[in-house]
Image 1 (cartoon, rainbow, N blue to C red):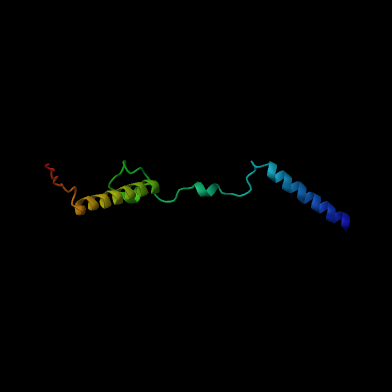
Image 2: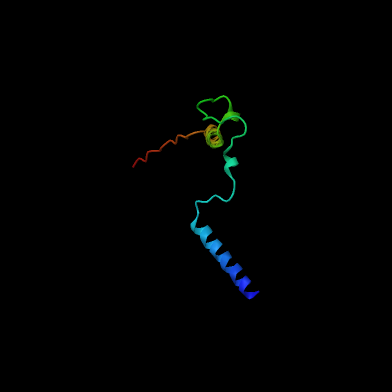
Length: 92
């Protein structure tokens, strides 16, 4: 009984050490994750009028740029621009 337990532990150690060195062996079937579902996504400059077809990262970039432009434009419009100060010359 003790010898079979020792043999089982040795087999487990051998299996663990070989799995670490054999990293090229695919153990999980994840090849199906690369399959695309739905229509292919395009760059935003290829179809600028259809945001639903854009790649996700392009949609984020365009959205953030649009919001930044809107906020900056609103700030410039409502801040009144640059105020001209009249300088008073000191006369002695």
